[in-house]
Length: 459
Ligand code: H79
Image (cartoon, rainbow, N blue to C red; front, side):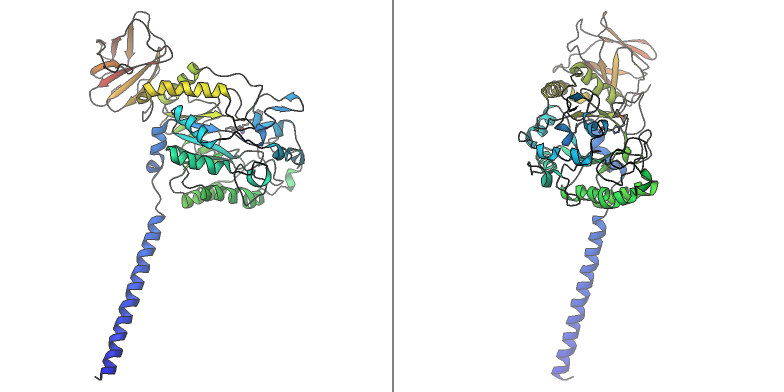
């Protein structure tokens, strides 16, 4: 073989090896691409949420400006429904954009409040039924950055502040309802925009879905980093196929993002990762799946200046405990003003809840519901090897009866007692024990007695 020929053969081999390597690396990168599409199991997705138990819901939008009043009339009920209540024409409601300039808004402050309250996640309205996007949307100019003097993107600011503070961030999106869009037909008769767009037969719901709702959901899922939850609401019109399509989109773009059941259903748990109960509804008993109470501190979600029916701190703490004892989460709402301020009565109550959780958080976070059924004096939450007895009504004789427990109690003590001094425990009969308590309740709202149990709890 001439030198030239040998060189050519050599070069051919080099080229072959190079092409081979390139192909292999392409194959590798395809494998990586496949890996990136890994879909975590339901358990993997939901474990943080199950542990979290307590989150902040925020209803904030154009409706926060009229604040539950229209032309001097107080609307009562839900402030965020003012457009529907007063049948305000789109063209008139749109004028609210000019007044939306919440100069006092401070994302860090809101997130810090959630943290002080002991909340572990936050869900804010990115679009409510009024159709106004509270984030920078390219799909519709009817959004907070392009249409208001404020010009800032609160969703972006909150997402960043949450990331910094270790709070999971989620967005609420009213998907089937949109009073601004002429095609958003509403299956629940009368709850759509029937004043601007009276003829339902002319509405092409699919058009609304394709040109607004789905592209906006895509924006939310791609513009703000990892979302903990996409919280759908305003439902009842989409078909099962449309629901499936949305789930597929969420899973593709954000494999770890939770979807609540209101994607497709109000009254049952057919869709999504966990069940959102009706507004302010608590399950009657321990449920075998994740559920959440979307609750209000007063009556309204969106700010309403005449709604002063504030639940007491005692009620709110006991709600949280009741919900946890039934295996649920509490997504407790605040309705900031048009200036961007969370009402003081909400702030005070949330801080008080945080104080209680600082001392008693062990009996809430990461717990499962009560294995004991109904208890006459309060509620119970559980962790492996431990029961937390939440005593709402302190027994006058200092004897706390715990019915239905078949296990040997290794030790009983008060959760707030740093020394964990033993409380005397007597075994009355096979499945009832009696814990002797101090004469006065150390915490009148809820004193937690811990029972250390041998092995798994048997009831
Ligand atoms: O965002 C909050 C509510 O605005 C929303 N869900 C929570 C989280 C919600 N959308 N629809 N519904 C609740 C149920 C519908 C309730 C209604 Fe009514 C009863 C519509 C008409 C009668 C309540 C009372 C709203 C207006 C009057």
